[in-house]
Length: 111
Image (tube, rainbow, N blue to C red):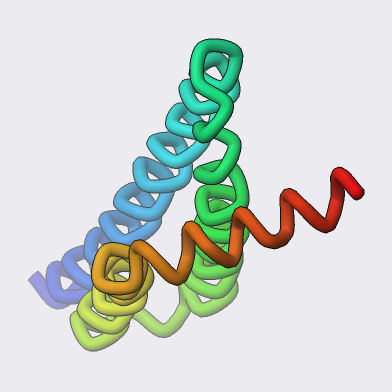
């Protein structure tokens, strides 16, 4: 019975890693969908830059969680979830500036 809390904490960090893996996979599927969608709508390219940044961010969070896997506590689980939700909230609240920034980057790459 002494090992039970240790197994529970290990489950918590594995749960965080699984949540991050699902988020990375979802963003990569969205990138593939946007890549196909850009053939039908030229403005779909504007979503590639924010999704690319988001996938790199989630990959860094995954590597950080993998690095701190020995520090197993509910605090790290909740911290990881908060850091996963923050960019989603910021992208949704600042949708127009993000799209304008992406448009300026695409225009500078084309010229």
